[in-house]
Image (cartoon, rainbow, N blue to C red; front, side, top):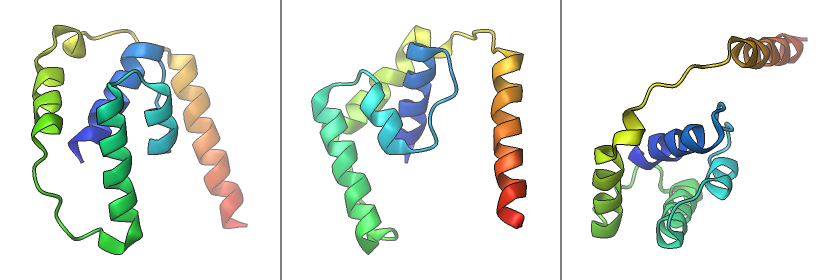
Length: 102
């Protein structure tokens, strides 16, 4: 689960935009080591196959990647967010939600 936040944070760092809702879309677009991407994909597949409650043990290279990412200075940089982009995204969500009610 920590990787979801890191993938989204990396997406924001790279694209300056709201990450896609789909973890697969975000993972495909961000620049992360291929070994990390492969392991995250395997973890997601494991959880989606009905093993949601089964724990995944610590994987040393993933844990080290998470620690290294959190220690990077750029991951703490606050950047301005486009109000227009947020407004557009919220309108999209609200209109989609409203149309689902019909």
